[in-house]
Length: 154
Image (tube, rainbow, N blue to C red):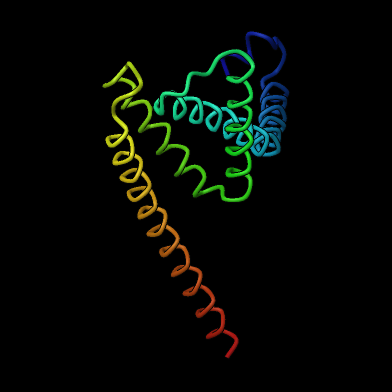
């Protein structure tokens, strides 16, 4: 309200209404842009991960090759996010987390392959179990709602 009164010197009711309208517009904009932003994030993370994996394998990337590998990784990340959103986020975040940890422990890039693999698998298993529990709870709640609705019909 303080911000609105700085720009609006009239009555408070129009300032509140303008604030509500602007808030609703930005909320709708956020909903519509969510898919775009998630796709961009998948592209960026996928490209980053493929570059890091190439460096860990000792592949020297430079110039155009670096960009080609980044774009290929980005497209893989984009496809993962598009079709397998939950598992793509789990996979990409596990890969990114494992690579960040390994990079901080082994900055030269060649060592740490086994640690990377262990951290990646641990991340996927942990996040996957959390997702499975959440889905089981939501399915149970949905089945209870359907059962209650069916009982009301009878």
